[in-house]
Length: 61
Image 1: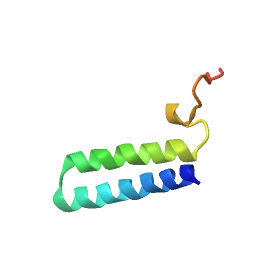
Image 2: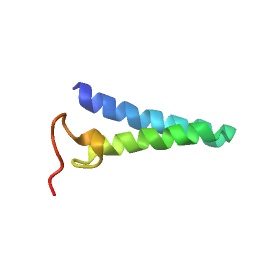
Image 3: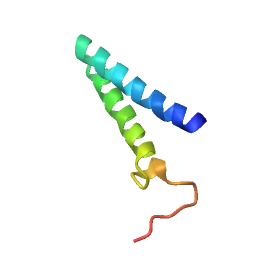
Image 4: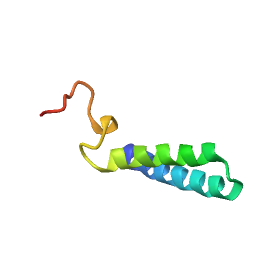
């Protein structure tokens, strides 16, 4: 249950950063939101990026 919770928290944190960044026009929060969203999608889609691979697993050509 920990992994789905972390994934959901990543999405909530990304949305919060987007919301605060747009309201205050702070580029750093928008960037943080984009990074958190990227981490969210990396966990949701198998084979998407380095974050979805297990340690020691190599990408096959």
